[in-house]
Image (cartoon, rainbow, N blue to C red; front, side, top):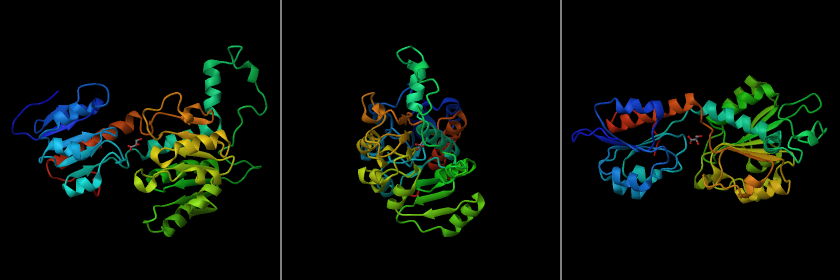
Amino acid sequence: VSHLSDSKPKVVICRDLGPATALLMNRTDIEVVLWPEDRGCAREWLLENIKGAVGVLVLLPDIVNAELLEAAGPNLRVVSTMSVGYEHIDLPLMAQRKIRVGYTPDVLTEAVADLSVMLALMAGRNDGVAYSLVKNGDASGSWSKFNWSPFTFCGPQLSTTASSPNRTVGFLGFGRISQATLARLVPFGITHCIYTGSPTSKPETARDAALKAKYKLAAVERVDLDRLARESDVLFVLTPGGKETYHLVDAAFLKKMKEMSVLINTSRGTVVDSDALATALHEKWIWGAGLDVVEGEPRIGTDHPLVKEPRCVIVPHIGSATFQTRMDMATRAIDNLIGGVFGTEMPAELDA
Ligand code: DGY
């Protein structure tokens, strides 16, 4: 699909953006080339169509590397990704070629925080096993064999109780989504919040004191990885991917975690070593896991060691998948693209 004109800047859009597509197609000042199918954009199509483009709007599966820039040629001024993550974009290369990069922070914070809490509840409460029993039944074709068995399906409780009054939540990475997740957990009665920050970031003691007072917590404390692993009852992995965070959660880390703890990953699959996590679940080093992202996705077959683990709840990278959030992400990605194409302000530009 394309609006053709020789003089207008060409932009390539790697996926139909649903209702937001109209925001592009109605414009008369750009030539829009839109991947026409309802599936991921084929690489060959992109390499062919990006020739001469001034801007490109990509999604997480579209790798932005030297090959793509080569195919685009010298006109390319902006890469806009409809995601907060940018692992798929070679940022040093963008800086070197002076290509601006737009992304979509903020607008998906609440949706991903919602899903993080959902997974914490599901993983703790044995949802993988319980749900599949209802769907598939036992030998009797129902769940009658397990009816009200006092401790079947039991798991660790996220909320505090009079008999179990302390709960520590840990965050690997303490950015916007972690803080929104913390806010959601306060009504569950959690008592302690610990987190690790990037080694290059400065301590934010004033912010932490303010959060501690606001939520009436016993602690909001920046700790090292060792304490994070040892003390968290529920650990949320919410840090960008890339070389710096690759396999931060490995066998050594998982071995330190509490036996009744739950690990949630709603950021990037590469942060967690999948084989080590499968072993940790299988050998009961930890209680359970809830994953929105898995290393090597989307090719995660039913024979994947994590899919086979009954206490691992996996959803297919749907953290931001609500109508409201995806519309906001698409709109922001389009606004970034247009800003980059015409050399004006982009609502969310990455420091490449
Ligand atoms: C992103 O936008 O990078 C997230 O992974 C969406 O869930």
